[in-house]
Length: 318
Image 1 (cartoon, helix red, strand yellow):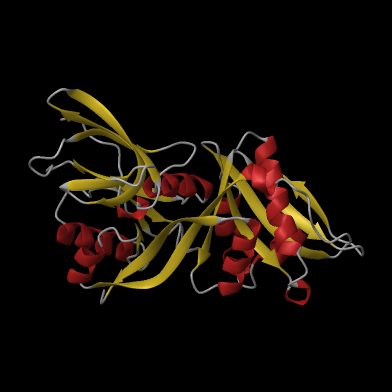
Image 2 (spheres, one colour):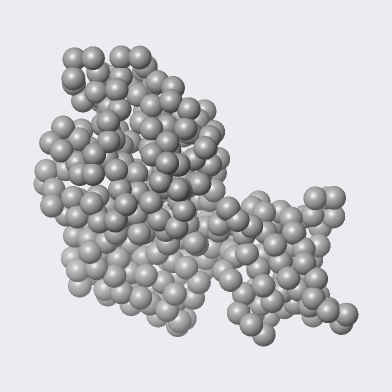
């Protein structure tokens, strides 16, 4: 049987199209993904009927086996979006472990210093966990897995790994962000590189590993650095956008503490969306910690919806 493009439990709720085989030939099923495991996939069609199909590698006996399956464009699945997000936040060093990607960038950020878990590591999970642990310890770091929820949750818990923090990946059509609404006294400008004013807003600890962070920020080919200034010319907020595969990754949205709740973060996000749309990106995504309630509320008000969740996992002991 031909390999099926990756779908995982993190894609539940997304619109998918599946082609399966039965005795009288192939047929297609389009609808909302209800469940997926190693034996069966269930899809709710528009008429409300739930269709059960056999899912590789071990299709359930009696169910038509799926031979092609994917999330319907312009949307994509959790695993594909995480691959795009890696290109937007590129680590200095990578090493593959089966379909997993181990990443290292001097300890700057979890995204660039964790394993992007996708598919199979090509070996039993216990062996893969040992290999990951050895690799990160040899780099002077902490073993960390970035895993779309709820993929491998039970298996990792059984291997004595635990979740340290959880993140929402949110998405939106860039056309929904193009309206230029913001405070009249705020002006947003764009630059190909971050200047001192932009960098000074990023993080109070940014100077500690400035070059490491700069390498990540300027790594993608198509990027922009947005700066919000007030009527006095003071930098009051920043943001960053990068393009890949028709998607814009929005990162580094920061507003100065004394200027929060004035619409600056919204203006920056909309400006980055307009930049993305003007450069051919039809969709945008961003990532936010589940504990950042204020940011989640802001992005929901702008029209972002949850694309998927992912968790960072660490071993109970190293």
